[in-house]
Image (cartoon, rainbow, N blue to C red):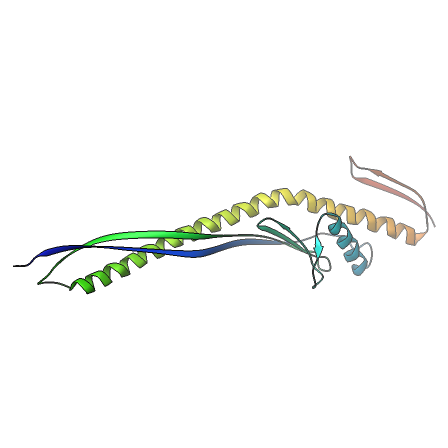
Length: 190
């Protein structure tokens, strides 16, 4: 006579998950002065806005989990969002076996453990996807916040370059700026 038995197998795992998203763009800076002078002006303006110069010459600013990196020489801007979490998951399964037919308790337990590991992997994949979505949302939100600042940096660098170019052309008689319209008028005596 066969006897049925029930086994319960429980598995848990903890993993450190990371996700990130990045977007790159190019600054549209007019070449009013030689490229190295334009890069210097861009560096100076970025420093005023909290960017720090790195060993490779790029300018970097971290805002929490977000990083903005500008290469003053090429004008490339990259905005990166990174997020990470330590996630714990648990799964549990029951199985029924018979002592005289079918797989032994050990092989039944091993098969259930393999199924549980697959279940856990699926749960971690869902968490990874959630983290990826979170990083993408952070990036999109930050882009809407940083675009006006980047535009202002480009405008300021252009104004400074125009002023320097005017000084190279002759004696500057008058400079008038209208912040509201964004216009800059420079009168030069050649």
